[in-house]
Amino acid sequence: MDLATLKAFKPSEYQEAADGYRATGDMASSAKDTVENQISAGIRNQLDGKTAEAALRELKEVSKNFHYVQTECGLASTALNGFAFDMAAAKRKLEAVLEDAKAAGCTVGADGSVTYPAGGKEVDGKVPEGGTMPPDTSPTDPTAQALERQAANIHPNPNFGKAQDFANRIGDALKEATDADAKWAPKLRALKADDDLVVSDRDWSDAKSDMDGVRDAGKGYLDSLPHPPKDGSPKDNASWWKGLTPEQQADYISVHPDSIGKLDGLPAVVRDEANRTVLDETHGQAQLDYDAWLKKNPEPKRYGPYFNPMTGTEVKGAMVETQEWKDWEEKRKKAHKSLDGMNAIQERFDSTGTNGLPEAYLLGFSAEGDGRAIVANGNPDTADHQAVYVPGTTSDLGSIGGGIDRMTKVWHAAHDEANGKSVSTITWLGYDAPDDVVKDAPFEHYAYDGAPAFNKFLDGLDTTHTGDTAAHRTVIAHSYGTTLVGAAAQTGHVSADDLVFAGSPGVKVSGADELDVPKGHVWNEEADGDVVPDLGRYGHGGDAFIIPSDPQFGANQMATDTEGHSGYWDETSHGPSQSLKNQALVVVGKGDDVALKPSPGFGGADPDYWAHVK
Image (cartoon, rainbow, N blue to C red; front, side):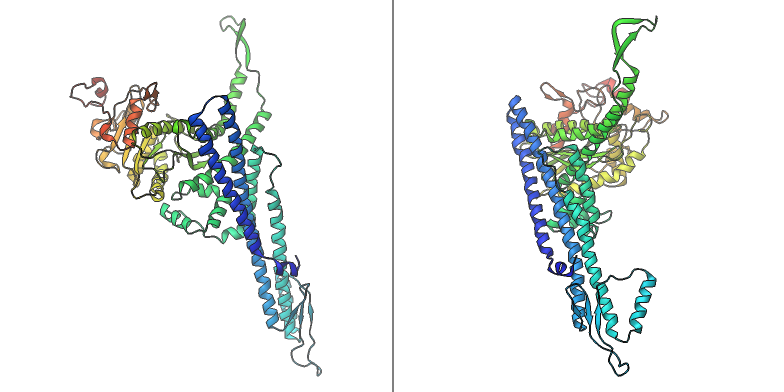
């Protein structure tokens, strides 16, 4: 880049262009929300049939386009801000050296050369003449630096050394500007989208590559922004976020959505925007990886002839699945598992409006390891009642659909009991749950490792909630999730008004009074046929431990009409089961209406139920 171009460069023009792209991205985001949460939701809530289904399919594609536009415009805005930042730095250096050269009596030519005047002590009756120094760059080699200093020191005209320094500084500024232009030009060109109307998995994979490129190229600009507090509390995070300008906030979301999406203390709408970008980019690459796996591992023949195991002869007309196909199918399911979870999250997005279901918010997402996901029905920041569900053993990203379904049912049941107040129900898979009931669940480190993240998440809900009064919050935990909640109460503070345990094997404390809620606000469900409570009670060498189902624990024993370990959220043809309704009543603060199991020694007591706790 030449001197005249850098002198004429106006960073403000590129910053204004960045603002334009950001505004376009904001419009695309608003349009996406309108399509998903108003138009599509309205169709699901009021219409059905093939025409409605076709319309929803088309609207889903439109929404994808808007989200892609939002993401790419955000990257374009950040890239332009980064380019303007780099060029402005180079221009400031050029302007500074031009001022210094002028003050020293030197003249800078159009090509960047520096002409210096005569000066110094007379030599043979003459003052050393001036001269012209061509633009150069500062030497980086120590030997070259030493030689340049020596030449300046021995030159009879002291202006020679000054001019040499000015010429080097001019060259450095021009090189810096040239490097910035060369660095950013391909990044900006890469943001050009395909000339079609279909946002493919490849497009989202490329968007992730674009993001990485902009983030790497814009390191100088991004490092100049206020950084989020290291290991900050939700209040610290909130204060940092509020201190950023809208432009800075948008840039962070554009290139660090994974970091922004996991910060407790940031508004739900912000975390949702960031995490949806991570979800779409991750899904795009995961789908490409899965398609490549299928291509590399073609499906073998599924059915083969059946041979009588007694005679070894083929049974004509009888076909069975081959062992080769069974092995292939097991590997295929494993290859597709993370996609199962991501598809389940998308299905929840696509269900907004069904029977009045509110919009969903993705408050956390990661596909690393077993994965993480936090999904809310309704905005918790504005809800009067919040319910946070903690799943148990075997929970991972691939199976998140089950937890989402449970909290959707709780939302419907609680909404019906809320007397017009708003409800938000949240599935919190923010920890590494045990993978196996026998091999992993007996170990408590999963609970203690996950407890700090859980407490921080609840504190974050406190920080971001708006309104004059705090939300009424219920924690609902299932199986090993109850153990995590107990560990969280032991090691920190569980910010909740009510605790509901279902199928608990134990919560690390032996009494309800050791938990972080007022007396009478610990609730427990143990359904017929649920063996997990007994596994917790007698699972340590035969020694008996007190668990929430025991009378001496002090929890309210809620009546259940479901069976087994996973039925607490079952619905009937007439509505929610008693097990589900009781949870909903607690969620909306109607604990007095909860149906309880009869206590031993009173009429109607079930001796079979109480026999094992005596």
